[in-house]
Length: 180
Image (cartoon, rainbow, N blue to C red; front, top):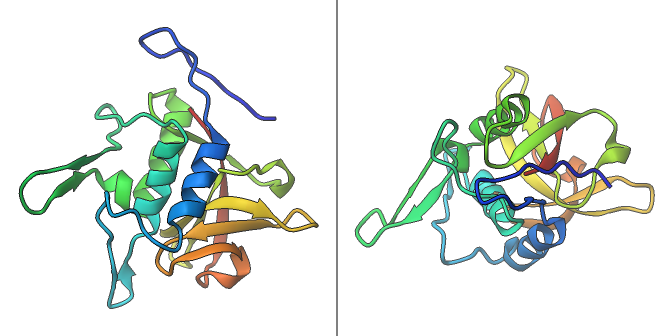
């Protein structure tokens, strides 16, 4: 098993709880959590994929961070009823936040890019990139086929345990090994 720990300010080891992240995905992939805003797809732009992926990371024990790389979600008492960082809700931004946190050792969730799909585990994250180089979609790995192909849960469109080939058309796939 691939684990990388860091010592947080309180001196406790932080380990990504993959099972908690995947359990959250199973619970809310098809029926979104009403405690969070849901971002609908509008004119084939936007959507809720990364908001959902961030919720799964949070359920897996990732701590929200406000600096140097902001990744957070706050409920508010007045409209719009929430505030979140761009990296919480935009695939391209979350992808780079995870990569930079890994490279710089910043607090918060981290993602090490890998090319060997056999190293993937439950709770790791995939990102899809278009032909212009924009990362436009994220999803969490929730299961594997008998030949180790990852199955994912996602929002925009809401789905659970689907093959990556059955999601959005893309030019490339990025696999990120998640750790805290």
